[in-house]
Length: 318
Image (cartoon, rainbow, N blue to C red; front, side):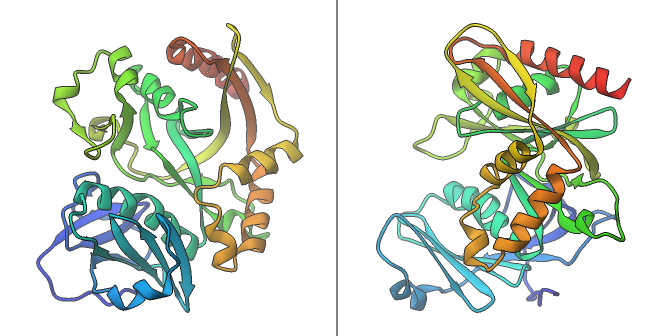
């Protein structure tokens, strides 16, 4: 699997441990490919995909698989194609917001590419503590990025935000090693309400797209650049009440949680990866501790949550 890269004047980046060559600027990424990149390069650029439009059903969000490619249409944004695990191309629709196109390229499209490379994409944020990665997963609005930001304010480093890549090589019987989380992008996405709690002025940050109240927060100074063993996963859940409860999951519960919080899990069956997804999640559930965190639905508890998680991590290390 090797990308055939055209001769072009573009940009060089790195993400998920591999070099990226892009025709468009991607300020979210770490600039310039650096020594130590692993894996084959990825090409991101424009392609006239208009002949494929008639193949997709009407609707704001549709997808289809064509041979080694997956086509994803986002109404009023673009048609995207992810091919062979090494190429993401896009065909913008009239009046499309380029920042929104970038959002889908680095989110849904990158997740599809990770599937093609047999890298499990979990939906959440991950931080580095004492040489290990800890992931926070949950439904939208559960507070994953906000909790990670509380750790960053205490001096810890970020591994990933939104998409956590876990290579599936650890499932090999000959390997037997721990699963790893690979760093993604040196950027967080925070809602304006969370920014206010952290004392961040919105004027100092870039809005992700025109109609959203989410902002891009660069974290290059506190970004983990090398893969780390994934030592724990915490599922965030907001509920009525005032207390915080943390409890470990059984293995069956771990499998269920990791399955539910796989990013864009609908792509797995479309790509014929149902069995691979199940095997990878099951193996991960047998190697990593998973906890459920119930937090109050009202109020700001990120700092309190971070403190309790650090206590739990410390007990485990001791």
